[in-house]
Length: 136
Image (tube, rainbow, N blue to C red; front, side):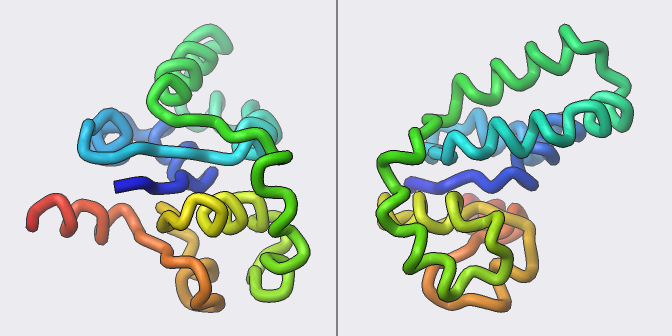
């Protein structure tokens, strides 16, 4: 299964080793994320390091390991969808994730309830739903 990984999932994987990290390292999925995810994580780097109790070196190592499992896609590959996505995206900052999902004809893995409830163009799968899929 192909999934686009949202920034909130990446941050959860950084802060809580366990379920989310385990899913990212599972061979059952191929993960993609827009290059914008790196900007989002960098924007919250200090807060993430503080919450996780990480040194900068530890933080960089975790990011590197997670990114080794996720194909980072340059914006030029999905930017052509920006205007279309902005028409239905509940948050303008989420357009790269939605556009990449549409470009790849994939679902978006996100725990953002607005993405799930306030648009119906792109399928959004939560971590809980992903775990349920694995049980089947």
